[in-house]
Image (cartoon, rainbow, N blue to C red; front, side, top):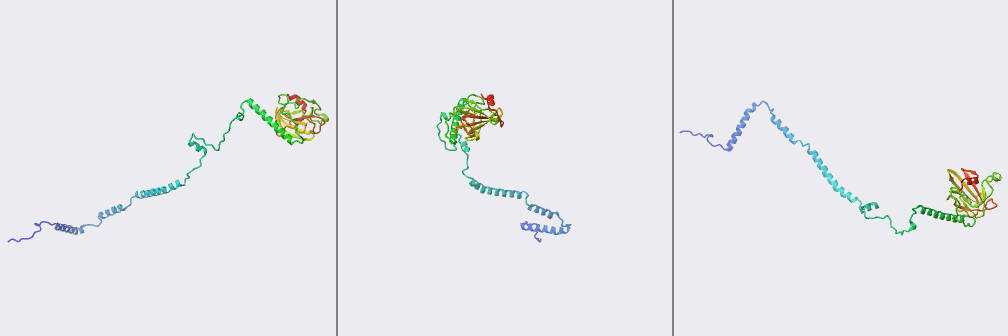
Length: 303
């Protein structure tokens, strides 16, 4: 009788048995081959360690990107808070000029002050032609003479003398005769050289005219020995010329110091004031500050 021996080769392998056998086989092989390994300097463990370290190293781009995101969020928060505050702080009504207001509406006229309606008349127009200008000048001159006559009369020591202000000296030259009708009296240099003018005898109240255009320097009711007198400064042919008119009637002066006069304009009336014994005009002439013969000067220049 044959002996039956259980053989594991004939039995089907089970999973647990096979796994146990493989494990055992591998364990046995490892134990038998461990002495055969020259050294434990295998590169496998060292090669795994750097890979793990490299996996743990942070990304160099991630940190700047994270900072940029944070800064953007902070900036957004600041803008969200600041912009409404700035808008609330701005004034609602800003000061505007009249020109700026007018620009908004070109059809609108903005006046700086209240306008008053004024009715225009012909008298309010300005003179535009030479004839109108001359008439206007004449009217202004007559009004000025009337005003000055009133001023002189009020400042004189005697009642004012009525004078026809429309009178002018005859002639049309730059130099005029100071009297229209007169008789020649004492001349220049008489009385032993003490008489520095020329005497023109005329009736009291005869008009006296400015010998030339100029500016009145003196106009007084008492001017030393000249009595009531007027002096005028002129510029004639580039020369400084002065004229003096003495012994006028009290209260007859028609000009004041500083006034501008025209050639032939009436300045007073013949009288006998100061050191005088009869009605006459004492007339003197100065050129560049020096006395000259007034009779010779008038004969050479008056016309």
